[in-house]
Image 1 (cartoon, rainbow, N blue to C red):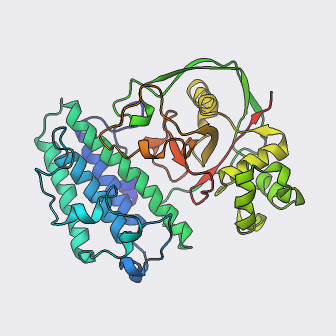
Image 2: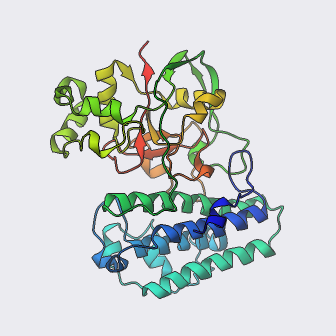
Length: 389
């Protein structure tokens, strides 16, 4: 992405989600530039899905980029409430539904299916984007229902852009210069006191909401103390490099099982000590907390702190932060237009909050619920802690 594109400010509503038609156009264009820039230097062989390294936590490059285009085309131009499979409106690319629909294409098959060549797939990405822009230009700017599909497509591409960066790191490839630089954490950490009280998890006021944020969920939070910043790389390394790391009493049964089969911690030399600890999974965060006499915050505690304290909010956004809360539906949940976004993962994943240095600011609002299984640490994830009452 050019420096000028990086500096361009997209008009957004107070939650950071593009809302008006000019903003939607701008967000679609700029995010696509960024998406393509992430894989601009991918080794040539990796554009062939069969030669892309197979891992359960990544997707072949050609499939993932074409899937981004398919998703946007489908939910913006083809999906209708009376035609949720888009059968009445064919894709711009013949056969795209059978190749790039993540809800129907098994993960392992993405390496072996027969695909159009790279040039055709990139042409499809451009054609899809142009069709979206044409639909915006010819649409009714007051039609909020139609705008939702475009907002969903932008958020989906935001999430996949971070996944592309995660894939590069997982494969040991360099992170492109277009990715923002990580910031350091404050030298000293102290506890922030919150009186607790009533809070509504989720929100009913933003122009775009994911289905798992709805309906707003009232909760009563007890007073708590939470750290002013995430745990630093140096603080985590002090535990991971000590004999205590192997103390079974600090680990849950499933965490201990994970540790027995995991590679050793890379050591202090792998990370600047003044950065937030990163690529730390839930089991490790949980064990560090027991070692330090602390605990992970609940989702409600984290969200209350982020909505009531500008200082707390300013300390977030460098790493995703594990919470103590299982990813579960709020009472009255109903699946959204993208039905498989949340519902299949309830009760098996853990909530993370805050966003990372790679996360687009559109997704860095307090109510956003990221979710992964406890053993995953390929994300740009760390943690902060609460004092034990």
